[in-house]
Image 1 (tube, protein in one colour):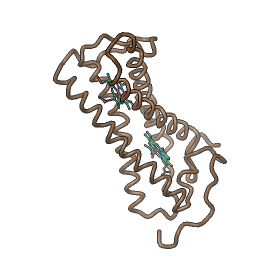
Image 2 (tube, rainbow, N blue to C red):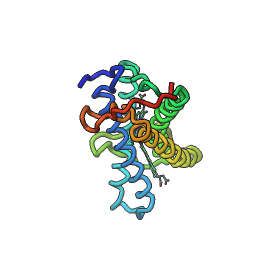
Image 3 (cartoon, helix red, strand yellow):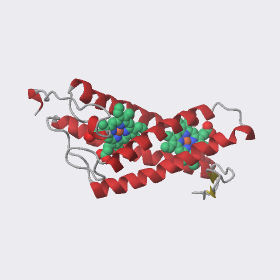
Image 4 (cartoon, rainbow, N blue to C red):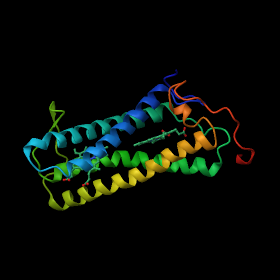
Amino acid sequence: MSLKNTAERWGSVSQLLHWTIAVLILAIGTVGLVMGELPRSPKWFWVYTLHKSLGLTVLALVLVRIAWRLYAGACPPVPGTPRWQARLASLTHAAIYGLILAMPLSGWLYDSASGLRPFRWFGLAEVPKLSPPNEALAGAMHSTHELLFWVLLALVAGHAGAALYHHFIRRDATLARMLPRGWIATPTRSPPEDSA
Ligand code: HEM
Ligand code: HEM
């Protein structure tokens, strides 16, 4: 499999980054929602540290992904995709990129402005604060962090739904080309006539 993207398929680097980031975000979001319900006792602080450490890891991976995207480009829409769908997909992808950057940044700013004790990334290295304690900023970033997650989740639901629609209804290669060759069969039927 090629490392770089080609006109037909996403390369292995783009695929690896896409699925790693997707799984991490869904796991971090779930931990985020659950940890709010935990008793605020030192016994559970590791869950917060795990959430924050994974979140900063996603931030680094998203920066790598954006750099790779600028270097390796993107696959063009699969032949036969109506132009409005391709436009909507590009807009959704751009919004998702913005959100997956804003999620960890808002969390980091919230953590910084709350004046909490510094935490160590997976217990290994102390993470610097982005701002001095600031109650108003902490409140705003807390709401932003939560709101952005629901917006991201709604977009990702539409995004995943679109991928499944392409695979099962339009029966084109959109989903198969984001997965390693042979993981799922590329549908063989040609796209409908009316889609040009
Ligand atoms: C948190 C979860 C997810 C995030 C953040 C995410 C993000 C993205 C982004 C930003 C792109 C655009 C890539 C680019 O143009 O550089 C993309 C492409 C893609 N995603 Fe996701 N995604 C997620 C989950 C999923 C799921 C669950 C599926 C499938 C069920 C999926 C299927 C695809 C496919 C097939 C493409 C390629 C589209 C094309 O070739 O035009 N994604 N994803
Ligand atoms: C992709 C990255 C991230 C995602 C998807 C995410 C998601 C979430 C979600 C869904 C919540 C629950 C919101 C609520 O119900 O109030 C949450 C809470 C929280 N997040 Fe994140 N987060 C991410 C990164 C970060 C980072 C990098 C930090 C800090 C460095 C952070 C710090 C926090 C804190 C402290 C809370 C608890 C808020 C509270 O209840 O007091 N998050 N996060």
